[in-house]
Every structure is written in C-alpha cells, then in structure tokens.
Image 1 (cartoon, helix red, strand yellow):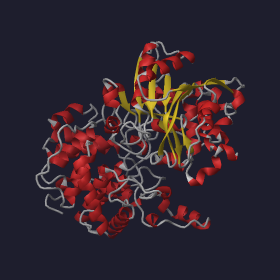
Image 2 (cartoon, helix red, strand yellow; image 1 turned 90 degrees about the horizontal axis):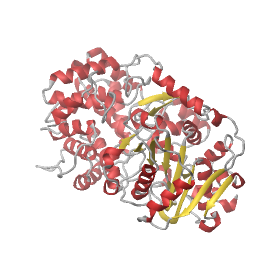
Image 3 (tube, chains in turn orange, yellow; image 1 turned 180 degrees about the vertical axis):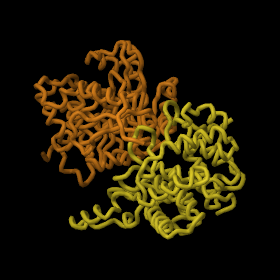
Length: 322
Length: 290
C-alpha cells in the first residue's frame, strides 16, 4: 500500500490549516472570558445552570453540528474519574435548546476498549435517553489524516475521527483532576480522547513518545472552535487521573478559550499554571494564561479556591511555591 | 444469529467496520475467523481477499486502508493459517512480528538510558510488542503476537520464534498485578499498583497457555472472580478463551443474560469463545490442546 493523501485528507488538512492560521501566530491580547459558576451537587439545578452559562457565553450553535466530548476513562459509577453523566445531559439539552442542528456525544477512552460498557457503568445509559444513538466511539470511527498547523511535538501528522473533524463546535467536558504526569488534566488534555485507538492503540502511547505536553498543544491547535465546560463539582486530587481521591469543589468553569479555562482551573486547584509545561507552551501562541488577560465572571477564584493534594513528585507545581 | 449479523455488516469491499463505516483490519480478521469456524466460506473468502490486498511491503498490516504504517494487527492477521492467507504473505507477517519490539527494548533506547545512568526496571528486561512501531510494549499486542507465533511454532519449530515466545512470556509474567491478573501495561507505573482488567487478564492467560507459576495461579483466581462480575462482552470473551486455554473454565459455564456484544469484533469473538473448544481450534490449531 502506498502512503498517499486522499483528496478528503488534503481537504481536511487545508481546512484545518486555514482555520488555524491565527493559532500559529501570537494573538493580540483580547482578553478571554472565563466564568466560574457555583454548582454544589449533581442535581436537577444543573440544567438551568448550564443553560445560563451557554447564554452568558453567547454560544452560536443554531443550525450547527456540535460534538460533546466528555472524559470517560474507567468503569466507575458516577464518581470522580469520569465526567458526570448529568452534566453531559445538561449540556446536551442546553445545546438543543439553543437550536443546534445535531448534538453528538463522542469519546475515545485511552485505556479501555469497551467504551459503551464503560459508559454504561458510568451511568450514561441511565441518565441520557437514547444514549447509544447519540454516541460515537472515537476510537473506532472513520479517520482522515491531518497535519498540525504548527507542530510542537514530533508528530508531523495524525489520523483523527471524522466525527470531530466535521464538528462546527467541540464542547469539551473534562473533569477537574490532578494528573501524575502532566500535573493537571483539564480541557486541553481532554483532547487526547479524540485520538483514535483503532489507529494508535490503547493507550495512545504515540502521544507519550512524541512529547506528551507538546502533543496536548498540537491537538489543541487542531480544534480552534471549542467551548470548555469543566466538571469541578467533584474533582480528583492526589494520584489522578484514575487512582486519586474525590475532591468536592462545587464549581463549573467555562469559556471558549481552553487555555484560559485551564489556567483558571489551576488557580482554583492552587496549581501554578506556569508550571504546567503544556500551558506554558500554549501561552507562547495564546497569552491568556495570565490573570489580567482573562475576563473573570461569576465567582472570584479566591472565593472557590480549593487546594488539591498533588502527587509527591509534583509538589513543586503548587501555586504557593511559585 | 451472530452469523447473520456478521454477514449483514460486511462492507462491499469485503472487509468489516468496527461498528459502522469503512473497513478495518481488526474486525475483518475476527469476522473471517468466526465465519470460517461456522463454515461460511463465501463471506470469509471475500474478507480474506480484503486482507491480502491490505498487506504492506514491509510484511505487516495497517489498521485500515490509507494508514501508511504496519501495526499490532499484523499479529491478528497471522492468526489465520498460511493456507488461508497465502504461504508467502503469512511468512512475511511472521517476519514482521519477529522484528517488532517495544521501543524500551531497542538497542538505541537502552544505550541512551545506560548513558544517562537510568537503571532498567525488571519488567523492561524482556521485549514485548507495541501497538505501533516506535512505542512501548503492552500486554494486549504482546498477547496477540504470542498467539500467532505459538501457532507458527507448532507448525515449524524455529529458534527465533521460540526466543520471542520465551521473552513474551517473561514480559507478561513481570507485569502481573499485585492482586493477580493484568492491567493493560505495567503492574506498578510511577510507583503505584495498577488494577487488573478482565479483558487483558483473559488475553494474557490465553498467551500463557500451559505456563504454571504461583503468580499465574493467582491470576487465574482473579480471572474466575472477573468471570462472575464482568458485564462486558469484550471482557467475557477473553476471560472465557483465557481460562479455557488454561483448562480452568468452569464446567457448563453460561454467560450472564443481558451482556450483548457492542462491536463487530465482540460479536465475532463471542462466536469463537462460545464454540466447542472455546477458541482452541482457531487459536492453537487443536480443540484439545491445553
């Protein structure tokens, strides 16, 4: 078989490149809006809360194809590892209410191959009507080749699923967790789940060997139309993202700029965002890491700050030690 | 019923999708194996032609057409016999498998680590197989490659095959989790004990057929516990095959009701796992081999 680009692959790459021209160059400092909203529990009030967040951020999804990307990792019922299914359902309903033409829920877990079984164990079938019809396993979806507009990692190309490449908006719903390799896993790291296991395996070890922080930034640059809504109601501290301890924070953190959203989450967790290599890298092309470049709405960071226990070898990323 | 599902989902090009869409190598191999065992030679034959066309010049297989890299699925394709695949094509597949090692086992990597003064963990002593070249060895692709090489070794005893089988066994034995069974990778990544998974535990037990150590015995206990708890078709498929390979599948075992396959490989593997011999005929060339 000859390595060759199909016309579809070229189109996908060209379209991505055209859209991402702005991501490859330093941006003028138009502050990013990030909202912190209190959400004490996973209950019915989430529907109204999420709807208000979407309205505040003026999400223009009418007639658009939207893909919701939760963080599904392990067989665990409604706990601290996976994005809570009620939040995913609230986002689904909120996007439908805004007139989205289609809303798909899609994820490609990094460790477990039986994604739908995992989703069932995590409560998605119970909570979201017709979940199986709405869901696409990104590990097994059809793929096209794309090239990051400006490659920080050793990846010169990547195969990505059609479901996410064809989305007008990617709504990233990560969990607020510590991560024993990269410090914290939030909106940017959540994009590892769009890399197809069907091509790269379980885990997607190519990303680790190609530079984990750099790959996070490369993936981020391939999806310029994102909205991040971080599940910080119950997060995870310690040996995250799987074996840590549940941590109640009681917030949702949202915005269209995942870099600014992640930096804000870090401050809530009392992690220094400038100590996370991928955020520092991203800051080179997007200066929204510093607080004065973020328009903060809702709660103040100080009002909801909840120090997360860090893995022993990552304690130097603690904000108070910066 | 399952045969009808497999035949109904075959793409016009002869291959199969995971769920829907284009053809991939992995579901095509499992579908061909299951259909051949069911005597459905016509759709299986079209699947075989798809596979033969997909082989790359380096002897390996890509995960699907258009992906210009041979990967772990080469081990899956090599589970087909030389008669089914073609003697030459099968020989090239085995050669590719014998060359493939996890990156942590390459001379270059080991030299780099030695120069940096990094001591090698015991579990990196023995090479396993990666999902894709240039990355680490993992339990899943190692188990699949070993199943293919064991078949080959039964046909013709060759020293290079035996050497890789031996190292593959050690690779798996050094990765048994503290509580028994296998995670997808290391038993203790970054200093924390990892949890075993049903599917990888079943795969590793299948690959370690006939190996008896206290740790393997403990792993079989974990597998039997999983067999009672697991509600995933993928997990149950591999547990059934792995325990049957070790001669430890409980007599008269029946799957719990309501656990349905969700993907095409799961459907095909359920056919293989529930057939007489629980896959032994397909995976080891003998229904009675234990």
